[in-house]
Image 1 (cartoon, rainbow, N blue to C red):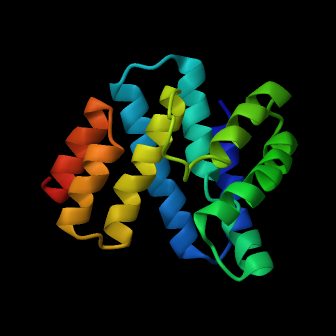
Image 2 (image 1 turned 180 degrees about the vertical axis):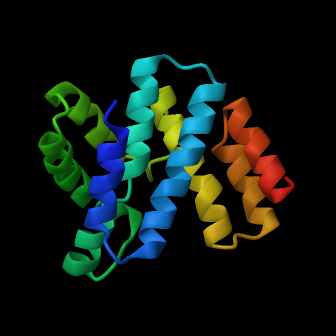
Length: 162
């Protein structure tokens, strides 16, 4: 797996933006933990890990183009940049297509079918809840509407006491 190359490329992409770099490394860590504990296959693990690192790659362009980092803009702009970055690293086109789909849907919470999508969403929420200081009543709603994996639910409980 080329995960270190992806992390390096994203760190370079967000050079001097510690907030973005910290965010994707935390999401990556939770995505890795969840995928390991949920015993998903190696191909899906790689998909989850790479997607977790690049999931917010569209923020920079969204802020420049729309003056906003809203999730819908990230989902529009992110896949374009992720495709270029992952191609440069040497991933095959089928894998890149799957990563780009996840990047383009990581703020889409309905009709989640694939385990890779579910894990990415949960990992991102585990980090966003803390970073955005979301209140306990809203965390309960997120828990009931979003979280499905046993590992994600355990970490949600351990981190936020819900």
